Length: 157
Picture (cartoon, rainbow, N blue to C red):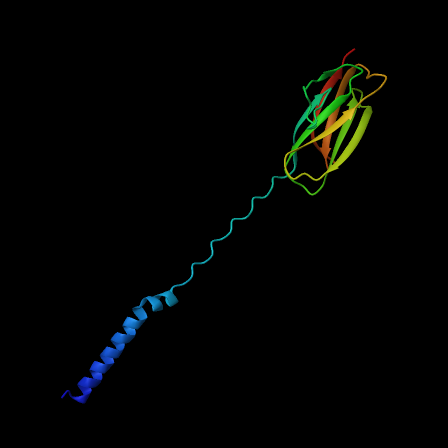
């Protein structure tokens, strides 16, 4: 017969061994596994800030509001179109066109309120039934009151 103290130690060792095996079992490991932290979500790219990218002049435009053939010299009877290409996004932009004659006299001013969400084209135009005087002209495009682009052109007899 085994002495009591030796039997007690054997039971204690077997108990420790059994607990160790239980903790090392697949079920215990699954409980101990930590769930991986969710991957941080990449922030959605912010749209570019609004800007005028191009101003073209011509005597005709297409359905896309783009000048068919850019020119800078016009005849007195021409309707003069300005095609203003923009990029970027903004909740609201007051896009304005100011046309002036060489002496600084304002020929026409027009404003269009737009809410761009990416590339866009806005059209402005001027016409004069009795014909434009020959000379040099200037077009200034502004966005929310700040100069944003422009073009110079001439009217020849």
